[in-house]
Amino acid sequence: MTYLILGAGFLGGVVRGLVGFIKHQFSYKNVPFKVEYFLGTVVISGMIGFLSASAMQNIGFSLEGTFTLALSFIIGYAGGDFIYSMFWNTTLSLKRLSLQRVKI
Image 1 (cartoon, rainbow, N blue to C red):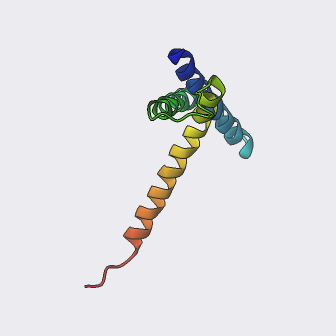
Image 2 (cartoon, one colour):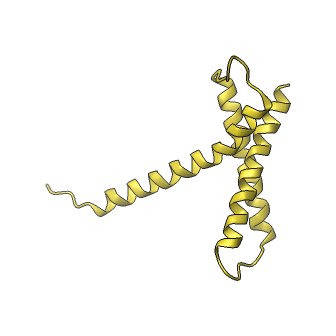
């Protein structure tokens, strides 16, 4: 059952990667399809989903006492967004810090 749960987390991440890739393709005109970018996006998103589901299961997170495949899928899907938000918030914070002048 653990392999199915982690697989559902991976699948959630893959779906998130596909959604992000499709949004990118339709957001701009004349975006070329790059197989390497597509596969990289899908695999990395799947790995993030896998790790997110694994982490949540290991800390004992559950919904009404159970950790289901659907919950693992949702955590896998949301894990990519969580990592993305952390990355951008950290990057923006570092840029703000570097722009501020320190007065001695």
